[in-house]
Amino acid sequence: MKLKNRVALVTGSSRGIGKAIALGLAGEGASVIVHGPLDSKELNSSFEQVKALSPHSIKIEAELSDSKAISGIFETIKNTFGRLDILVNNAATQKPDHFLDMKEEDWDHVLAVNLKAPFLCGQHAGRIMRDNGAGKVINISSVHAFDVRRNYAHYSCSKGGLETLTRSMALELAEYNIQVNSLVLGAIATDLTPPDRSAKLISAIPAKRVGETSEIAHLVVFLSSDGCDFMTGASITVDGGTTLGFCASRPDL
Image (cartoon, rainbow, N blue to C red; front, side):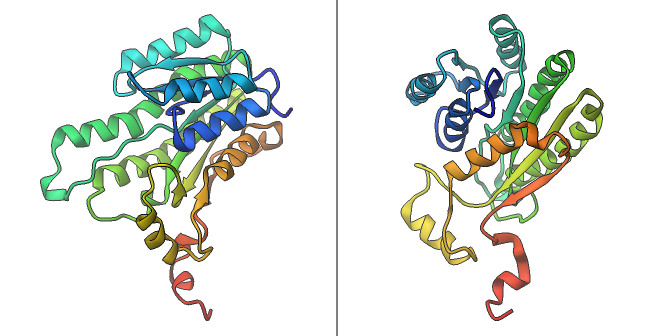
């Protein structure tokens, strides 16, 4: 097992991509902190599946828009495990609206969950990893950090900020043997993706399919392993060729 005796926190791991990542890490021997928001209906199911693979895993409910709740997550981790080896900043939210109609509170909430929370989690995790002498941080980003779309100004800004945060963290944490990288995701199939939406997405993807959550989990396991000790500050695009630009729109090239 690649990650035996490692401890990993995956934010937003009650469903979708985060759940797949948690299962992937647990399957490689890591003890996983499965996280979800308060009153999450899916959290218990996700946790039971993870625990079946890794018995020492635990679950935590916390709202990532609350800095005190974030501090509580890491207090629990320190008290339970005394260490943290892997942080996956996966949790994200979005509330689409036209730029001119976007509410300030919606802007603040999206930025709080998608950017401020990874910053705070990165600080807490980084201090623990520094004291342990090593660590891995993987930020789950989006192609919409660069390829903006209508009605998602706050989301795109949060993911663009996350990309810059990844590089800043990588630079400042390298001296503590902490590697920080991001996965820049395109369309990934989850239970939240309507079939009609998938069909529209596929027509614009050179690979002619959406990604699978298991594929993202495999990459996170790889980035969490010793084989990536010299890799930091990288943004790995996983989008089936969506962002290849002009060449993607010209199949004859």
